Length: 130
Image (cartoon, rainbow, N blue to C red; front, side):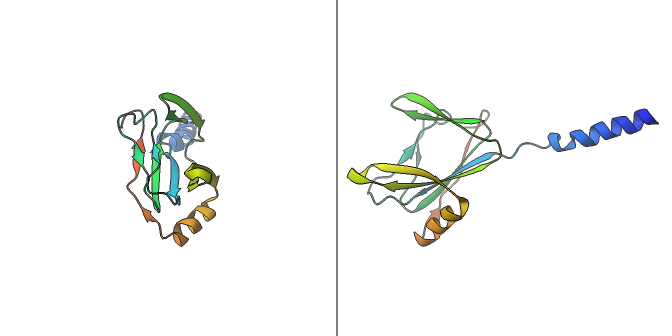
């Protein structure tokens, strides 16, 4: 009887791990006042850039613990906490250069609302799909 209870306790303890980890979500909002659109190129989508249009909100999902951003054909890695959501606002600075800053979810949503942003398709990056 003790063996059955012990096995049952182990199985119940492992139940949360049997369900997959939530993907990490990176939200990008483009509030830049330029004609062109910033493009995100990662090690998981080398053949196709992720284009973020003006007043557009794009979500990039990944199962990885880091995201390799490709700049001048060289990857730079951002370490991520699995299952966490990150929020970034893209704006322009002097000489029309892009500035990217991480913000809170509330600030992100307020920026999206007041800029009348539209949500773009989500991009799924992972080891199995691309």
